[in-house]
Amino acid sequence: MKVLVIGAAGMVGRKLVAALLAAGQINDKAISSLTLADVVEPSGLGIDIAHTVIATDLSEEGAAASLIAERPDMIFHLAAIVSGEAEADFEKGYRINLDGTRALLESIRLASQSEPYCPRLVFTSSIAVFGEPLPAVIGDEFQQTPLTSYGTQKAICELLLSDYSRRGFVDGVGIRLPTIAVRPGKPNKAASGFFSGIIREPLAGLEAVLPVADTVRHWFASPRAAVGFLLHGAAMDTAQLGSQRNLSMPGLAVTVGEQIAALERVAGPKAVALIRREPDAVIADMVAGWPKAFEAKRARSMGFVGDASFDEIIEIHIADELSGKVAL
Image (cartoon, rainbow, N blue to C red; front, side, top):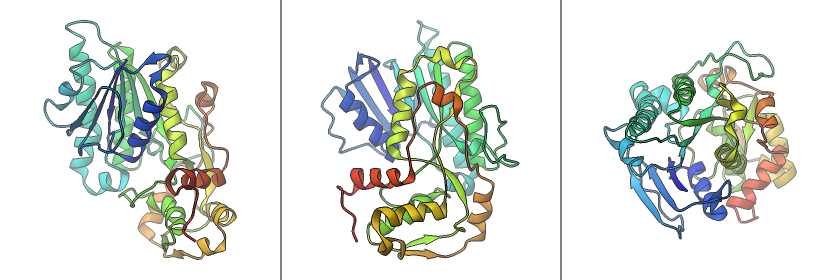
């Protein structure tokens, strides 16, 4: 099986590649080659099978066609710019998040004209496709009403994925990821970055800024769970999806206060003392319009599994990123 990972240099992309290498197969089919693409060249991944590493911008002319020239059987599309950056730079958001995805889908469609070709395409969408007015818990049939450019771009891509799947050009699975926490490394430009920061920084002995109230509730999954969602989407029987190709993933509905309580249980009061409350009205207003909880019944019925507790999410971060030790 030939596998292409677009967005392989990102946090989830790197973890996905590691999981693919560890498994060596998808659905009992051995991975024969692996192509890794991103705007910066993915490196330091320790790959020991036939592979190609490409630094490319999916939205540039000819880039998508080049990536699918070898007709990969499995495509993971993770490439995107995040919510805060997409909101700040309107043109860049649509060029990367929408035009790049459209170029990929069109390249696959055109490739199928010479001889049959219909790869599995696992696309990472977002809960940002939903916006106010929101129920306390969002069901699987709730309409998309995005309130950000990022959410709008992802919603359009979901519709494209469904239509190209309906026409038989791709076998698409849209994975609406919860907010991923705890994200390792340095903060990115996502407006949701503080959700990880108030855990990640204190565990490293650093101060973290909290711009919203403790009562703010949000929907979370760990990086490990996110990779599990993608792998399951790659292996699942897509006949279960019918015409509804996009799924809201299981997660945890947790308040900021409950995050902090979990941090204290796992790492103690010294970690919590490093959180500095600094209200930011802009961020607070943005977060107020985000989804807070999902039923995710369809995804769970199809075998997608989330995290058990926020304590577990913190423990996963410690185990995977801090070698089982905190800095306090």
